[in-house]
Image (cartoon, rainbow, N blue to C red):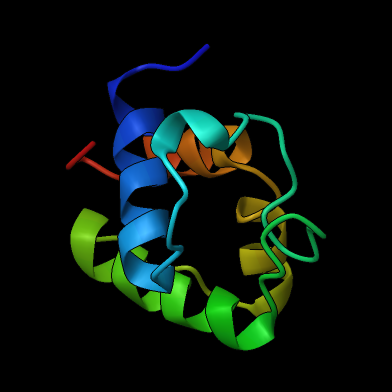
Length: 88
């Protein structure tokens, strides 16, 4: 179900986290973002990603539990942003 938003998110994730050699099509929509053995993203990466997403989309991701749920995958992040943002 890749669409313009998921492609934008994948590109943002790659740029923000400086994932060298990773292309947007390499990230599956439902692949776990945090704790994924393939990408090795940790809590610091998650925090950095949340800050960029909040700025880029004009949303506020409140608690760490909320961010963990939103960042479960690109699909869940896109769903979260569609529900929260007017800039998507």
